[in-house]
Amino acid sequence: MGYLAAAYAIFWGLTLAYVFSIASRQKNLAREIEALKKALKAKDEQG
Image (cartoon, rainbow, N blue to C red; front, side):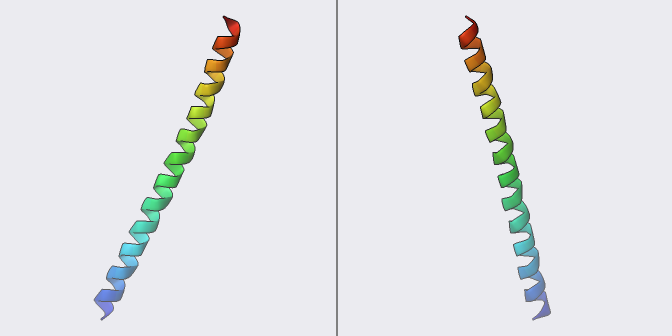
């Protein structure tokens, strides 16, 4: 029974790590998209 509890703990630990990793990547992509939008807007205003 101890192995089952350990397996569940490892599974949920890995799952949470994966979810936080995806959330972090999504935040980085959102920042990059905003920077690209600002750069495109500045370029459009110039010329």
